[in-house]
Length: 353
Image 1 (cartoon, rainbow, N blue to C red):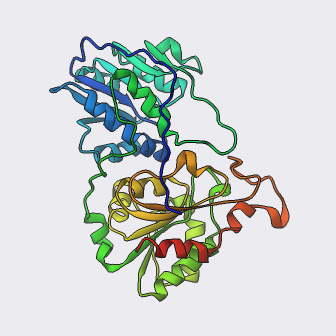
Image 2: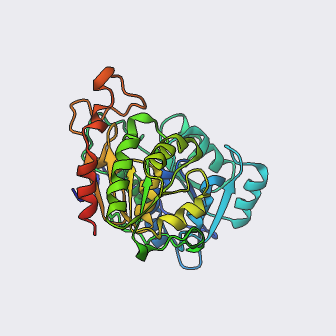
């Protein structure tokens, strides 16, 4: 089915933060994972609308994710973090930008500490994990959800930024802007009918649809005269190799692309078939349509935002379990993924054309 994010505007009353001096602008401490980052973009874009004219939007982000923030035309400066925690040199960079307000998106102790060390006057984030010590304004702790959610987790990020002013509760956000150079270097052009497959998922095997099923989709696409490219991180090479062995004519770029190059390729394919993964979220943010398979996780809570996507989710009673590895044994192991057939995924893919 076509995915439509459900957003929740919470009824609880949150006093607004009155900012008297923005100084040169607002600092955002980015989340640390690709998929999480992409689910925050609509909320951060709403922040852009709240900043007074002449002030900038600055992002403090892990270096591996900096290229993504740099692809947001509405972000003025990105400060990459070379290590897990902010360094003294990076603190100096932030302080030279002179933000008057900071919003901490992750729910970790360390992320709040990073911002506190930058001496920003107003620091906003969620409570919990002893974070309140480092923040000047806290919202209720991020709740743990059990079972199928009622709304997308973007709702919590929108609530967080809403304490700074009136915002629109929407998933709309301008698409990322990337160069076509890496795609063209590999001979990939959207008009030539390229399908991308991303068979990996960083979370673990409970989110990974079987490689042979991906291969079956590839074979069906190739039989219709299309072309196929495999994408993913180096640690996902095993699944990509199995697909390539079954479909020798595919282009296998697994483990060979930087984040910027991955964005270039995803922006220039016709569609993507993926698990619930960073690649799924990235393609959607780039305006590329696709089909996603959900097994152990919940599409209502973490579905793709941006382009048109179609979702196939497991119907097994134990899903979503949110486990990295299936607790079942034998033929029942990963039943949530195995029950979704290649034919069903290909049928959804055809509805995108």
